Amino acid sequence: MRFIFNKKINNIFNEVAEVGLALWQKGWAEKNAGNISVNISEFINEKGNTNLFHYFSLNKCYPILANQYLLVTSTGSRMRHIIKNPEASACIIKVSEDGNGYFLLSDHNIDLKPTSELPTHLAIHESLIENESKEKAVVHTHPNSLISLSHIVEYKNEENLNKLLWSMHSETFMMLPRGVGFISYSTPGSDELAIKTFREFAYHKVLIWEKHGCIAIGKDVFEAFDLIDIVSKSAEIFFTCRNAGFTPEGLTEKQLEKLKKQFSL
Image (cartoon, rainbow, N blue to C red; front, side):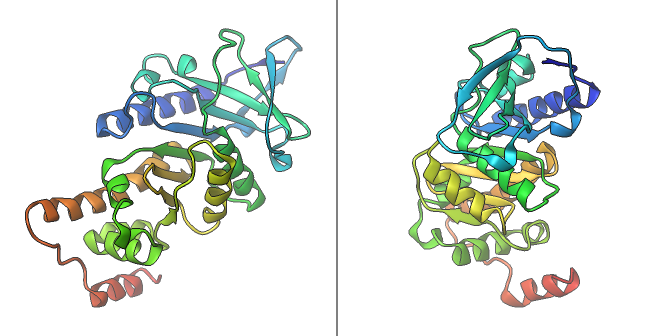
């Protein structure tokens, strides 16, 4: 197939590049850390019939993703380099008709492969379609403060974790009234991590992966980035206070209750 990358797809490439640079500038994307994907199926135009496909099988079947197109950052790529040449740091894949594999659209670099976290991205996008969600983008990165928080036993459960994050900054509650999800440690890139993750996204928009990082969904990559940014800021406020030698007071239960009533949550 020949694919015409229209203005919208080019814009999405640029948005991914912009967010990738922001992740690097935040210090959340060491070396080749982090990955991004966007469902771009609605913007693909197919014409002609040329050899631009290279097929790869998957360990798991994704029937709901059949014939869907995803823009995915490539394995080994660095977030800081995407802005220089997005098409050399990200690729477009088409899930096969039976959902058992994908075709890589690459007429310029057959060595370009999607992120090693592809199983998790596929599981999430399949779940989003199944639930008729508006979210199309997935961003995974390594915020220092959130990884640090996941090492503290007291905050390795959602109740304590969200109570802390909400209480540090009122905007966190306003943007994430359902809080964040917490995923106990699983090997990066594993099917186990993918299964745990997509299930939690039925309720949350941001998940913290224990001792690994954070992953979020959004209508676009900017929204997903913003959600991670506010959660990370709450954690940073907590650690800033602790490093200054005192335990932060945080918002009281009464103040949080007032927020809930004010925003009808």
